Amino acid sequence: MAWEQATVQTSDTACWVLSVVEALRHSGVLRRLFVRDVKVAAGDGAVVAWATAAGEAGSVAAADPVGVPLWQRVLEAVFVRKHRPRRLSSGPLGFQDVVPPAMGMGMKGRAAALEAYLALVTPGVHVTCALLTPRVGLPAAALTNAARPPPAGNVTALVAQLCIDLPDTRAHAVAVTSHRISNGTLTLSTYDQHFRQHGKYAVRAGAKGGAPECAWDDGTRTVCDGIVAVTIAGLPHEV
Image 1 (cartoon, rainbow, N blue to C red):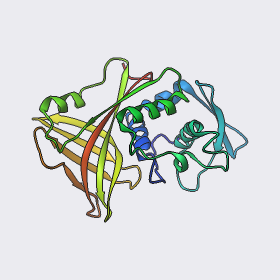
Image 2: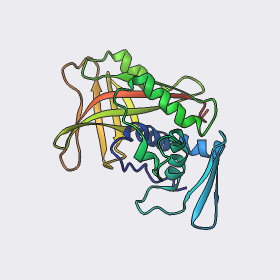
Image 3: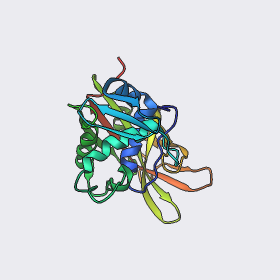
Image 4: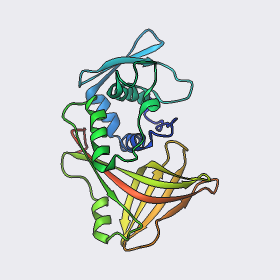
């Protein structure tokens, strides 16, 4: 399944979903979900068949010219079922071709959409999203809460919402792969599944008027303008 391979984003609108996917892959949650709720079997050598605990089934090509890992192609083949038949009745479009942008969804809308995708894998899943905005001067308690483990029986994926100078400023969501809090500062380590860049953002309690910045390897300026905590009930978690 190539679980060591990170998520690959090929579209401009799928970052809000794939950042969560990458955070779940990096933490091992997604692999445990596949072990529990996704059956994958080699077909005739050219295709791989899959079936989920929620009753979805299909197949994907065994190889991919773009380099998208097998686990991700199976997951996207599941997720794209949310958009059938209305969005896909006219051609063989993939998930990243049809996933809408998150703009205008709000946290409740984003949570509902993520829940609908995951429910195609495992029944009974429930998702909530909460947003922290660093530039307003977050209290130390808010950062501490963001760094805490999720409630029992839940998993949490953190996502950093960035503003990137490319040179036109654009919004983008990336996976938080690790975080720690010390002396009122929440430090986020991130991986950008689209541009394949690693970043680190130090969110300081009470810091108003600006948001933490980080430069990419090529010097591109990025700013962490928001932190989304995605809490999910119904996924396998470590005990």
